[in-house]
Length: 468
Ligand code: NOJ
Picture 1 (cartoon, protein in one colour):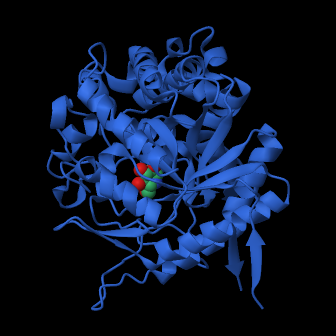
Picture 2 (cartoon, rainbow, N blue to C red; picture 1 turned 180 degrees about the vertical axis):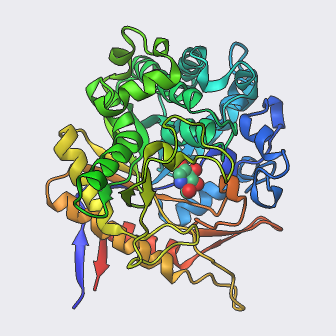
């Protein structure tokens, strides 16, 4: 027997993208290079050496993309602003032509009644700032606040929801420790510093947005969060799970919402990065009053304790050297009972309910948004021209129901942004992963809404999801 799960009135359904992943126009109208322009052009960094020079060409197709959203009944669009479009050198001079693009985008959305969710930083740091150390350099936090002021002054009256950073864990640790993403550095100490400076930048920018963007705008941050469980109840496995949780989740949640770093990793991180990166007053700055917390949820993690074979703090290196997991003292234990997406991520909707309940239990009643959830699958256009992504429909159905279960247990979840509107540039995986509810034919730039887009249109219209 099927039943219908209704969402609260005003629940904000949304779809998301990010500048480097969809815009293309890599050097149009005065844009400066970002770390992704640099990184993606180094052979071997990205699958098939794909880059975002053209991507979905949204920069030149923004009118028709917004029209498409309107046709699909999408009430809100989460996009990010490319910092080097606005400030080609990462500081100082403002490129008005770059800002105009976002003014135009926001106006197009407004004209169609689509709410704007703006992310200030989704990984495309101006290369000029990387040349001075990037996020490992404290100065970048202050430059970020300056950039936030420029964007807030230009768009503050027209954007309802602002997030400072998208997934700072990924920026810091994938970018500076694991090195799989731009800027491709492998130095744990630098990663710890980068994480801190990202958080400092968040605190500074959140205050700037609150001050400049007008009383109707709200500001928050989007963190990648995964519930972590131990594979057994042994003290070692439980401790390993706590370490990963402290590193991945609480290292960002605690300073932002409570004004301190998790005690169990603090000494280790101070040792790695040198104590002087953490200065008096930083944690007060980071704990800015924010209006909401965004959770990007893709999968849960299950881990066991690793035998302590590597020196803790050793730089995660090439395949025969110590790995990042060695540093954390964990081994991932795959859930064989769960199906996987094309990225290899386990599909675990129950993990979303668990995450949302944990957030409320540990951090109180701060309004929450799911700022990202979605999946890559091997989608294709069938001979009739349709893209029948039934796996994605079932993925989203399960996760929407999981979000509903959290709401039913009292979680103040205000909205849900599906990743992504379009198939797009999936970072080091290039164009090999299709996350969109709309298929993109990269040869022609044709957009083909998948079954999931039509299914979502019905969910949005009913503000409810049907389950079996
Ligand atoms: C997280 C990131 O914010 C987004 O850029 C990425 O494409 C998706 N997850 C999928 O990996």
